[in-house]
Every structure is written in C-alpha cells, then in structure tokens.
Length: 354
Image (cartoon, rainbow, N blue to C red; front, top):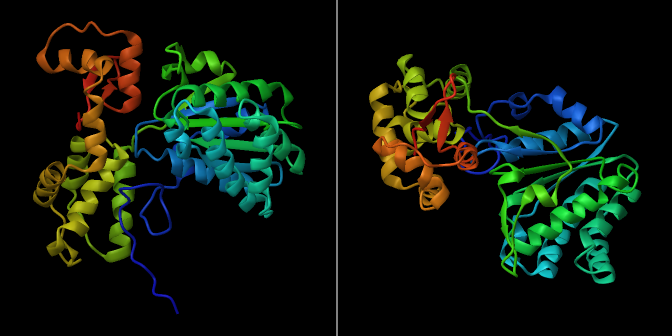
C-alpha cells in the first residue's frame, strides 16, 4: 500500500493534492465566468506570477469537463516562446502541445499527429485556425479553450496566434471554440509586440474580441488563516494567533509570499519539523529574512522588472518622494505585475516585496 504523503505549502507551479490549498474556483466569480462562456465570449485572466492563475484554469477545466455541456481544453503555449518571430516553429510547438492536451481529453492519441499534418497542409499563418476548426467539428460538445502563458509568446508568433483566434471568432461554436480564455501576467492591452520588421503593435489591436478582463486578487486575512490551519489540521502544529496579523502585514495576502513564508518556517527550518513546536512571530521574522537572503526565483523575477523603464517611472518617484511622470498605462502595468497596490481611496503604494 502506497504511503500517504504529508502535505506542504506550495511555492512553485499549480496546486496539487500534495499541497495545502484554498479551492481554486472560490477565487473567481464562477457564476460570472459561466455566463461569459454561455454567451460565447472570449476573455482574459491576468495576475502576477504565482498568484494561482494556472491552478484556477486547471480547476475550471476539470469543473467544465465534469458537466455535460462543454469540452474544456487547457494548453500552455510557453513552449513556443523560443520561436520568437519564427511563426512556423512557434505554431509547430503550439499544435504539438495542443494535440497532446486534446488527446487526453478526447481519449484519441492520434490527434497530435493530425494537428501537425494540418500545419503542413495549410501553412503556419492558418494552422491554429484550421486546427481549432477541426477539433470543434470532432467534438460532440462546444469547446472551451483555455490558453495559458499567452504573453510569454514573442513578436510575430504572438501576432499570428492572436489574429488567427480573432479570425475564427465568427465561426463559433460549431466550427470554432465557443469561448476562449487567455491567461497571462498582464491584460492584453499591455502586450507590446515588437515584430520582425520593427513595427510595434498592441495585443488589443490583434485581439479586439475580448469581452472582459478578470484578475485574481490576493488572499484575505481569513483565507490566510484558513490555509495555515490546514497545516495544523494535518500535523497538529499550532500557529500563535499573532501570526495571522503579521503575515498580513508582511505579504498583503500575496499567495506566493503567504505560502513561501509558511514553507520556510515549517519545513525549511528543520528544527520546526518537530510538530510540537508552536510557530511564533519570532520564527516568522527569521523565515522572512531567510527568504530574502535565499534570492528565491520569484523575487528575482520581480526585481528584474525594476529594470524596465516603464516600471522605474512608477517605482522610483514613490521611493524618493518625487512627483511621478508615469502614465496611467505604466501604473496599470505595475499593478498587474503586483509591484504596487491601490488603497481604498485610489492612492497607490508599494507592495511588500517591491
């Protein structure tokens, strides 16, 4: 009999059964999403890294596929990032991944090969359009297509993907997916696409069929407590009551930080693997310092964003107390990345990890 694994706090990738977690679909307005899908809308989900986007997308796929009205297909297109402006190589990578994911859902493992044949027959400029047309005809239910890491694509490859999705929109739901969800770090209007010929266009101009933009918020203080108490329930290890206010102060509820602090305190600090030890604010203070010194990948990625001119225009004046010369577009970009937050009255402030 297989040994049951103890759960841990998740600090990398989507949540799985081995992780303490909040129900992913509880973080969306599911009723709103189902209405968008019912009315054949395409929309965007965006949020900073390690906020739970992929977990929500996978949970939505599972939820929809347990029903009788749709077939949901999830595909991560990050594999095509290296193709940059080479549309053929980009489409080849995307169709191979789409074929693999669809094969699992359709239980037809010839699908991957069929999609790659389509690429050779119609060419890269229409391959995704033709592939989705083919899959929609093969399916006995309307397809809901969930595209993850869309803004990891670069240049002409991204332009081609967005324009093919826009072209097929009028054919839904019989000959094209009923609904398409694009998931990434920022809203599609903030995609700045440098084409091979030097032209700069925005994502919105390529994909002007977006009906709505959704974003994932941070955990509330009550959700932090609920997540941490999963660990207590599983191991018997207790968190001192003051911990929850302290974590809220340190993280503002940012999901990766909430999980990373607890993982550092309860698992990486080996002395605390003795579950009879109560987790105190002093332990969390040490965990915070250790996390900073570890130069975790997530924190390094955020720090790298500070090199971008549009980010510096927002952050630098806030740090030195000067008047900002940033645009509303720049500020929205920093909000989407999770580097700044809005207060209730609309003023901006730096997040804890900026």
